[in-house]
Structure formats: C-alpha cells, structure tokens
Image 1 (cartoon, rainbow, N blue to C red):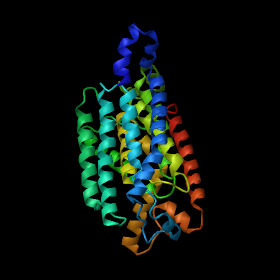
Image 2: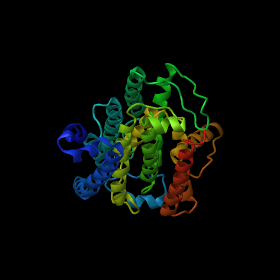
Image 3: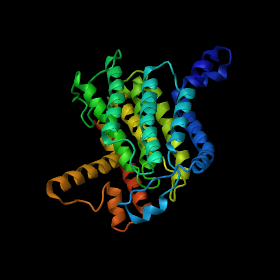
Length: 358
C-alpha cells in the first residue's frame, strides 16, 4: 500500500522515487515483519498463557518432550499477521501474484487455526481428522492453481534444474501438479515442526533462497542472462518471501531452545503452503525439492516408516519423523536442530547454484 500510495507522489517529492526499487521494498518488508513479530511476541505469549492455550504433547513421543506440555502454542498467528501486514505495506498490491500468495497464507492459516483450536478444546494432540484437513488443503490449493492456469501469460511449462532446454509442458495437468506442490509443501513443513526452532530455521533459509529466485525471475535482464523463465511481476512476491524471512527471525527469538512459544499448525501449514505457492508462481517448482530438502527428508521418513510397518510389520526408524529418530538415539535437541539447519543451508546454496549451472 505504501508503494501504491506514495510512489505516485515522486514527481513532487523526489525522495519517494525510492519506492520504485523492489530491492528497497524487499529489505524493508523483512525489517517491518521482524519488528512486528519481535515486538508483539511477548504480548501474545502472555495472552496465550492467560487462556491456558498450551501444547498437548504426544504420550508416545520422546519422554523429554513431556516437559514441553503446556508451552503456549498458536504462535503462528504472529507470523501470519506480520507477513500479511508487511506484504500489504510494501508490495504492489495491484499485482495478482501478491494476492495469490496472501490467499495461500491466510487460507492455510485458517485450516491450521481450526486444527489448533480443536486440539485446545479437546485437550488432546489431535484436532481435525486427516481427511478433513487434506480436503480443505486441496480445495484452497486447487483454487490457487486454477486461477494461475487462467492468468494471461502464465505458462504451464516446467523449469528443470540443470537442464536449460528441457521444459516439458504439462498443459491442464499442471493444475494437479501445482496442487501437489502446495499441499505437499504445507504438510512437509508441518511434519518438520517437532523440535524447538527446527521448522522455522529451514523456512527462513528457503524463504531467502526464493526471495533471490523470485527477484531474478521478475527481472528481464537477469532472467535472460541466467536462461531461466521470466515471470512478469514475480519480483513482487520477493517482497512476500522477505516478509516471511523477517517474521520468522522475530519468531525464532522466542522459539529457540528452550522455546517460549510454538507456532502450531496455524504457523506451519501456511508457511509451507506459501513457499509452495511461491515455487509454483516463480516457475521453480522442482527446485523446492532441493532447497527444501530438509522438509522432504522429514516427510519421506514418515512415508517410509508407515509403508514399512504396514507391509512388513517393522519400523525403519526408532520413531518418525526422522528428527525424533535422532532424539531416540540420544542426540540432544539443539544438536538435531543445528545439524538439520546446516543441511538446509548447504542445500539452499546448491539450489541457488542451479540458476547458473544449466
């Protein structure tokens, strides 16, 4: 809104010309989101404590997690508010891509809110049923995918990392593919959110990587030089991903071990969906498998564990997702978190190298 309100006045006040630069707005979107999250977090934590909205811990999990029971949850509301407000302030809200990523954030946030609220009401670790949650996720993702499909100029071709001349066109099947990316990303982040600071770290790293990807994809000269698809106005979603980065940093201050607040499903589901939507819009859908590799590892560990137990009656891991496996092997929680962060950073660097290696 600041861009739409203030930039038209640059002819009278030359200093307002700075709003035309996406790089300026990207930086201040991150700073604004950080300040919102950091300043409001203590107030939100107190309110959550007052209403006794605490985490319900699984009784079949690592015993050390029982101490976390009662820790305020639904802190993801803070991330949602910071991201949405910062994006509205600094992005060009006349661009449809901005509203699509916000729709993903708010829509999946609503699913997470209902899920967390039901857990609070029932006083147990399960809220919505898997079927209810999945149906709601698919509905929202489908609406986003169909909207994208019919946007003028949007292509259904895939950009494959390392292969500049291989761009398969999925046609109408791209709608199904986009839904899989968005819903899969949402659930993968949700599965990763099991230790203090574990999910929010890779979220920040992935958001930073896609801030660069979206900015480059929206820049005609840069995208042509790197031989990646040019997406008109994609740079505006870099403002959104920068807001995710900033709000996540502010939240991490209170979510780091030992956590004062958890994000809950109201945080993890929309963050994953938002990153998936950004990957789809920026035409770097497959890159998400690499840059979000930690989320993929966590999700795949659960899938393999379930398949193995149902088919052979045996478990592959001591406990899934895989971060619990390492805990059961005796690793301290901070060690698991930091090592997975290191993997996330390395995967992000490798992912960014694919912009040139093609």
